Image (tube, rainbow, N blue to C red; front, side, top):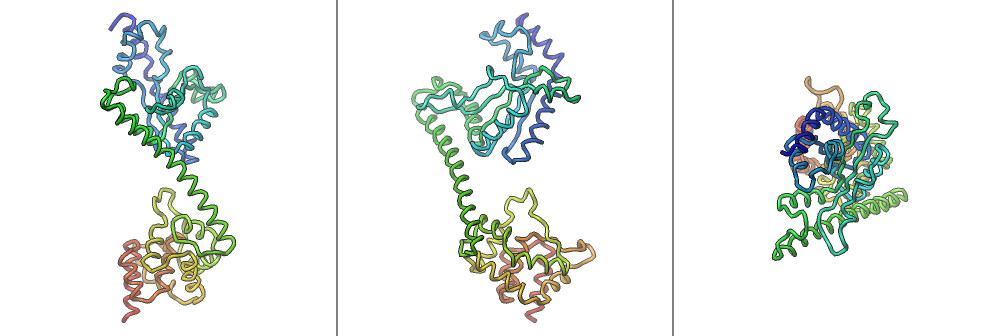
Length: 359
C-alpha cells in the first residue's frame, strides 16, 4: 500500500463501525417501508470490508482520486432485488421520498447501453438522509453519510451474477468467438423481463374481466386462481355458508399472508370432481347451504379432540372445498380427499365421518 492509500485505510478503519450501523439502519428502514407494497424479492446489505476498501483505493487509476475516504460513495451498500420492472419503478419513486439523492453520482445503467447493446442493467443511487429524516434522534449520528442503493429485477440480478462469474464487465472484454453467445443470453433475459411485465399486465386485465362478469352474475368462467379469488370475495352463497359454519364451531380465517398457493386445494379438488366453471362451484356451495342439515356440525364433532383448538379454523377457500366434498356421493368424496388430503387432523375426522356413512 502507498502512503496515500494507507492513510485512507486508517481513517476508514476508525469510522467503519458507524458505517455498519448506518447500513443496518438503512436496511431496516427499506424493509419496513417497502414491505407495504410487496415490491421486492430480496434486500441485500453490506458495509465495505477493509480488504475491499484497500483493493479499491490501491488501483493505479484511483491514485490521489480521493482527498478523504468519505468521498467513496459505496462504503455502505444495499441492493433491492424486485420482481418486475414496474416494481423497480415504484421502489425508485419511494427512494426519492426517503432520501436526498446525489444525482451527480447516481446512474441508470440502462441508459448507458446503446440500442444495439446488451449487458448489465441496474439503477444505482447514491443517497443520504433527507434533512427531516436526519433530524430524528436515532439518525443524527448518520448525518452526512452516503450509501449506494442498487435496484434491479431478479433477471437483471441473474445476469449481473453470471457476468461477475464470467468477468466480462465490458463488451470489449468478451472473446470474439463468444461475443454473440454472451449477447444473445443477455438479450434473452431482457426479453423475458419484458414478457414478465407484460404477463403481469395481462393478469390484471383478466381479473378485471372476471370481476365484471361476476358482478353481472355470469359465472360461466373457468376455474383458476384469479376467478376463484374474485368469486370468494364476492359470492353471497359462500357468505351464507360461512355464517352456518361459524354457528356450529368453525372459525373462518383469512388466507395466511405468506401462503404461496391459497387456492390450490380448491382448484385441484374442483378439477378432480369434474368441475370446470365457477358456477358449478357455486352450485355445490348453494346445495350445502340450502340443505341446512347437520353435516357441518358432524364434521366439527368428528374433528373435536382434547388436543384440538376450541374452533375448527379454516379459510373461505377451504370451506368452499369442503362444500364440494360434502355435496358429492360418499364414495366420490372419499376419493377426493384421498387424492387431495386436508390437514392431518381434519383428514382423519372426514374419513371417519364418510366411512360411517357407508356403514
